[in-house]
Length: 313
DNA sequence: AAAAAGCCCAACCGCGGCCGG
DNA sequence: CCCGGCCGCGGTTGGGCTTTT
Image 1: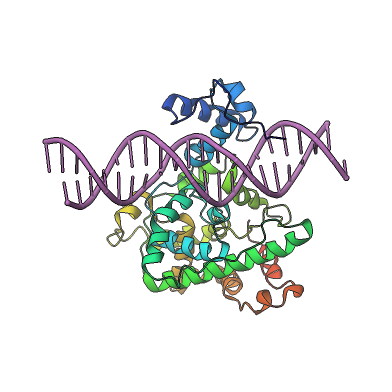
Image 2: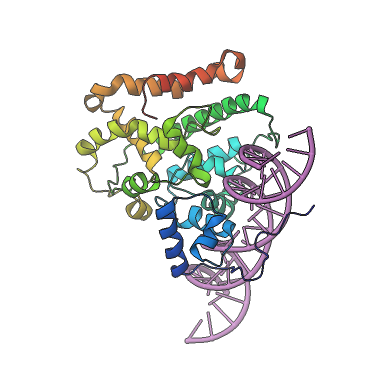
């Protein structure tokens, strides 16, 4: 039986969205929240199919989206995650809360793929060919694998970043503002869904991508705000690229970056040293427990351990 | 200054998974 | 258990913009 055509019906508008349509959609979502996309066209009068509405919202209108100007940090994170996760853009996007999967996908296809090809094929090692479908029984294992992979990716990315940008003053441009304030108002849609639902962090209920930069960002937020007043505001972002001036670095990357910057500033760190040590320990812990000793719940205990440590996921 | 080529990205398309009836 | 509908995802496209000749 053929799938009913979603957008083939007559009277359904296609193509670029107009500002008026955007306005209608935004005001609808503000009132009712994202979701139930099927009802959106009828209730708003938009001559768009539900799919188009959802896409427009998640890729363009959703608050907290950062567009264009990928930073080095984000780029490296994407490269690492792509190497580990493959073309699972939604999964990758869940580690870059301010980016949409579409954006990341486009950036990969237009910039990174070419760059990697030019820079040698070694880096472009194909991602793990994971089975397309996973039964319920495999879910947990896959969750664990994803956690482990993400952990490794973050660790590698951070290690690289540490080499590249030893002391990047925080742009202090308040990028976190719109993202943190607006984005979570109610956008369980699409790529950020797992990240959003994670704030309640029950690993079994959240998607497989539990370790999101959003959560890390939240975890570190307290420390960051303490440290920022000391360090960030002081210096002008002279070393920053234009992209960082206009958009700031990725919030998560900055959060992580600043966290690791604090690592070099014991005085600032002192009050929360134990917490930072905990996550550092978790992030940088030997992979032995995840790679080969699945049964023992290696990384699982890690994540749950972090959660149990009282991080405000 | 104009034309051509290349690039970028918003949006579309179709498939698969999930879930409720 | 099966079926149908909805949602989310990844791949692809095409129009507009930018750069090059």
